[in-house]
Image 1: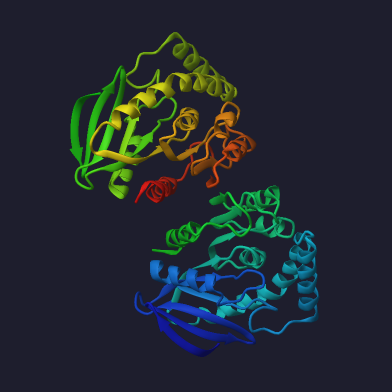
Image 2 (image 1 turned 90 degrees about the vertical axis):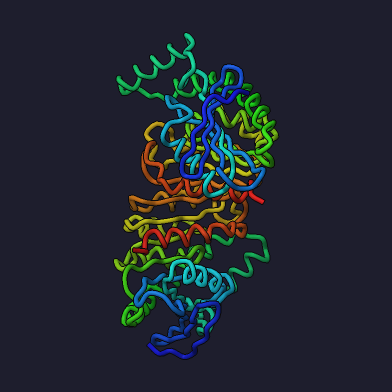
Length: 243
Length: 243
C-alpha cells in the first residue's frame, strides 16, 4: 500500500493510495479515537471513487461516526484503464440509452463481470487497510447501484464485513450471493424506478438471509433517492459498527 | 373541551381532557415556543390513549420536536363504554386467536366500523385543540395498526393533517381512502408478518396518492417492529411539521 497524496478539510483527512494497480482514497477523522472502524464505499456505474456524492457521504460518516471510509475506482472506472469488454459494454449501454431500449440486461451482465474483477481487489485493499494502526474493529460496506452489484458478492465472500447498505439493483445476478449474506442490511429501492422493476428490487431484498434487514422504498424514479437516505445509512453504520 | 387532570414529568406537561364524551390526553412541552404544531396519535387495537408505547412516543415527539401530541381513546377502548358490536367483535377476535384461525377478516371489518365512529370524533377533538392558544401550524398523524385503520380515512377527510405515519394494516378496507391522500407518508410494514400478507401491506403503501411516500419494511413478525422506527417517525415529523 502506497499513499500518494494527502489533503485535509473540515476535520477530515483525505489520503489517496494505491494497492497494486488499484487506486483508492481513505477519509479519516483529523482527530478522534486512536483506532476506529472502517466503511468501504462502492461507487455507481460510470462514476469514480471521488465523485461528489462519494465525497459527501464519506465526510458525513467521518464527521458523524468518527469512522474511516475507503473507496476505490472499480475496474474500468475512474483512473483505471478500460479493457475491450469495458469499451464494448459501455458502448452497448450508450446505444441502448440513445435508442430508448432497456438498459437492465446490459447493466446486469456488465456489472456481474466487473464484480468478478472487483471482489478480489477489494479483499486485497481491505487486507492493506487493516494493517494501518488507526483502523480497527468491524467493517461496513455502503454502495447502491453498481456498488451493490459488486458489494453483494463481496459481502457474501468477506466475513470481515458485518453490516451493509445496498440497493437500486436488479435481483437476477445477485439472488444467490444475497442468500449467503446474514449480516444486518439496509436496502434502498425506488418505488417508481423506470429501469428496475419493483418486483425485481423486492426480490433482491427478500433474498438476503439476514435476520435483521430493513427496506426503504421511496416514491420516485431511479435518480430520485431522497437525501435523507444518506442520513439513515449514517445512523445504520453508527448503530452497527459503533461501540 | 374540559381539562380534567394535569401532571408534569421530564419537561412534558400531560393534561387529560374530554371533548363531548371522548376522553383524551394532550402532551405539551413544559417550556418552548409560544405556539407549536400538533401530532395526533392513534393507538392500536385493545390498547388505549395512555398505553406505555403511546406515552413513550409522545414524550419523544415533545422532547425532540417541541410539538404538542394528542391521543384519544378510540370507540370501545380505554375508558369508553363498549357497545354490543364491540362486545361481539372482540369476542369473535378472542375466539379466532384461541382457535388459531385468521384474525384478519375480523380486524378489518371491526376496525372499519370503529373508523366510522372515530373520524367525526377526531375532527371535533382537532377543532377543540386548535382553539388552544399554544397550538398552531401544521398537524401530523401517527398511528400503526388500528391507528392506521382510523388514521387513513381521517387523513383522507381532514385537510388540516399534512403529514402522516401509518402501517401494519391490511389494504382491503383502506385502498380507496389511501388513494385520496396526497400528503407525505411514512409507512411501516413487517416483512414476515404472520397476520398481514406481505402483498396486502405493499398494496396499501402503493395505494397512497402522495408524491412523497416512504416504505420501511423490516424483517420479523407482526410484533417485531424495531424501536428505531420511532426515531424515524420523530425525524419525519420534525422534517414535515417543523419550521
